[in-house]
Image (cartoon, rainbow, N blue to C red):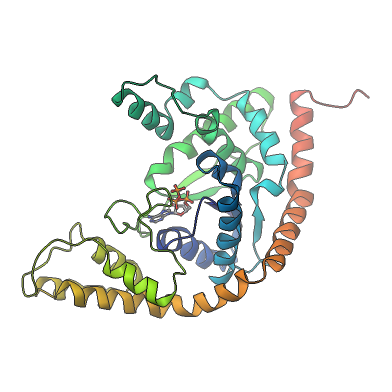
Length: 334
Ligand code: ATP
């Protein structure tokens, strides 16, 4: 089987973008017998962006419950919390020592932060933590520890997979063939969902529709999606329409074609929003009911996460780290 790895950062409430872009396709793929799925809660990553303990903790519960509500079967897949596997930060250090600093200087997230500082005439590194700078090494450890072969990502993440390949390759070159090099799997058919303001829906932008917003709130949020000011009867553009993009991510090909015609025929924005709300609600309502039951029992989720991590450490992480420690010379003196 091919090993596929998907993580979600526990930096906030899971949103429709996480569902369409990660949870729904990953859960569907996990039902394929030819796939060995690794699903994890990236809580060490969350600390890079969020320094509110209650938020990280709540997000961990919500994202775990979201995975389970959407059909992840913890008996079939590897389901774990990153911080329950101490071998991940340990491997991060081993990789840090082979990672080129120059390569990290070119990481998009770091460069973007430097560019913002320059635009404001600040020091290049003002306010930038070493954690943000090291993010690609932690991500490489997530991937390489389990020799994940396929990592489904958006285009903006390709560079991180390439860095993981680079670090893995250097390590292999120095110490022998320990790592399988991962491939980025760009899922062309998986949409990047825009948020309420038209930018990419993201926990860091405050533009999200929470995946399990109660029905009334979902309706209100859908009605707050930005649209242009065209009146009922005027033809609407599907191109660049956040509303249309979100609709398309939930609808069948026929429904999407019908919506496209409705746009051309000048559907009123209110009516288009009502259709979108109904389409999303049909898919989400049954999952929401399960989600609400799950978040009410954090101890059940906690137990599943711990069992998941314990199993994975035993079958893979602990013996593999012992092998890597020996490879680099951190062996007992016997
Ligand atoms: P952050 O704001 O912290 O970057 P995020 O919600 O944008 O959070 P992650 O938690 O890093 O993103 O992403 C988890 C998964 O959800 C990834 O596979 C990512 O590709 C997917 N994802 C995130 N946002 C979207 C979106 N708007 N559309 C489609 N997929 C998305």
